[in-house]
Amino acid sequence: MVDRGSLERFRSDLDRVWPDWRHADATLGLAVSGGPDSLALLILAHAVLKGRIEVATVDHQLRAESGDEAKYVARLCTSLQIPVNVLVVDLAAGNLQAEARKARYQALAKWARNRAGAVATAHHADDQVETLLMRLNRGAGISGLSGIRERSWIPGSEVALVRPLLNWRRHELEALVSASGSIPVRDPSNVDMSFDRARLRSQIADADWLNTEGIVRSARHLAEAEEEIARLCSMERRRAVHSSKERTIYTPQASTFIQKRVVQMIFAERHKEVSLSQVAELVAKLQRSENANLAGVLVSPKNGSWTFEAEPPRQAG
Image (cartoon, rainbow, N blue to C red; front, side, top):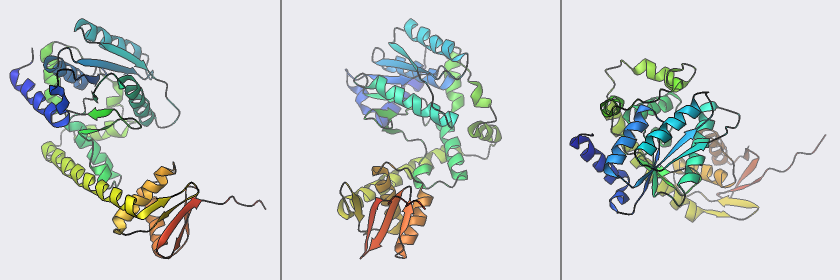
């Protein structure tokens, strides 16, 4: 039984990130791994949205126990009469955690399409702090320092992604699960020091000088700033960029900061993933009226405009 205060708090969180929950026919999809955070999300959502939630649990097949953990989540949901699907994914080669995240969200998007109004994950305040510190350590810009968003979209889809627990602390969620009598799954990667996040978590565990609530507020302020920047970039893109099949012509009208973001958008439209630091070097050359190339794209400045087109093939010999 969840206490009334926690339920009211969760309702308020839903009002902020997914107000559609108040519609009688609205269904929320939950991503549940079986860990304490996602079990807390399941417990809260089941109490507030009884009969209007569906669960997906993803088996990444990274550990021998993962299949049993997915079955555990499925049994728990079945006992609560909650529809549940086990999504088995195969990972591509590369960064293990990045590929797992990509495969997980792709599977969730496919599962949720035409099934749920949004998908909720159990990211919380401590996750937000870890994310901001990791990105700050890597020299991230405003977009990266916006942290984990309360509401966004699953990449490459039109499925809304909501995180109603971003104002909750890890220990609060652990206590809620413990009070329910449920036994959470413990993922060993959370304490595996070969992963950056696990190392950071161990370093800040006893850092009582960290103001978690303050950092979460900062992330929210930065997210608001990022939304305004995105609006200005879209405005610049509409008025100053003209594209054809062969080339894109950009006549900058905004500040250098906005120019860099728009150039990054142009590369993305050409299916080229480039970092902001790479774009910054390219823009500096263009502002000096120098030709530049990046990721197979030649960029030529002329009469105040920048022309982007495929780099010509190199001649042999």
